[in-house]
Amino acid sequence: MVERRVTVGWAEGLHARPASIFVRAASAAGVPVTVRKGEGNPVNAASMLGVLGLGAEGGEEIVLASEAEGAEEALDRLAKLVSEGLEELPETV
Picture 1: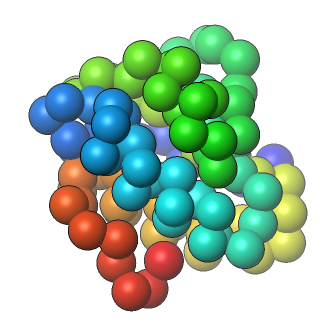
Picture 2: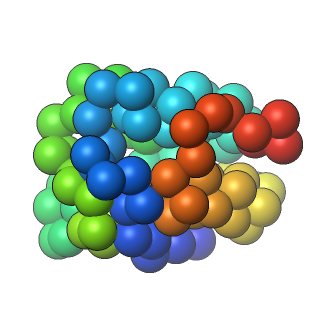
Picture 3: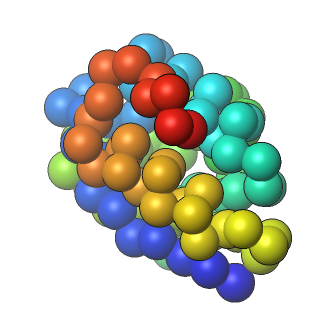
């Protein structure tokens, strides 16, 4: 299991537009990824409802995880997206 702990860089957290950007990036990652907040249950990172259900606020830590081959690179890209609070989906995701 590969994990990345990352602080949410969007001031509004993983809500509405940022959640949409994150979910699209997770869907395009090419590997199944889960995300959880704190010690909570992980949810599918490609699920808008799951991500919104986390209630992750700006400045809170989330954990991205995957067991798939190629997970290291995919999680690094997603972690960068989340930590920097990017407003647009990067071409490299």
